[in-house]
Length: 162
Image 1 (cartoon, rainbow, N blue to C red):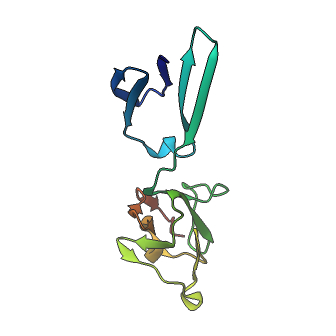
Image 2: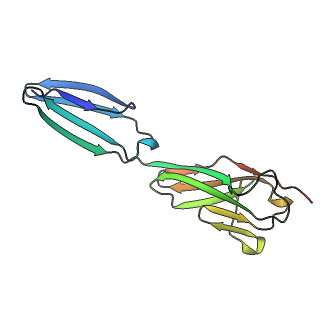
């Protein structure tokens, strides 16, 4: 009989191990998180009397809805944005499978690419040219994949009037 030892991560829980003659069966149950995507679970069987070791790893592919994080462009000082400045936002997205749609919202309303209105939407970036007081407020980005939709926490844009 081969005693079975399962190498497992902290989030995994072994439910049962049964032995019947020369067969030992182990069951492993886990609730994967997005952080588990790309990691592996390994099953290892050892026979101490013959020093025989059998090992097999299985990569985990975890599908999950997007996690979106909006932020003001890194080169901008959020406390020193004045009317007439150009402003940009970035949306970082973690998702599996990849997000097929990214949208931006201002005060809860969708933003559209509109060069004449100085609004440039390009994938995961939003550019506002020559901002005015009307551009002040809360901005969010949203991302969608087959698992669902993810919306970022809002980012506030404050504009100093001249």
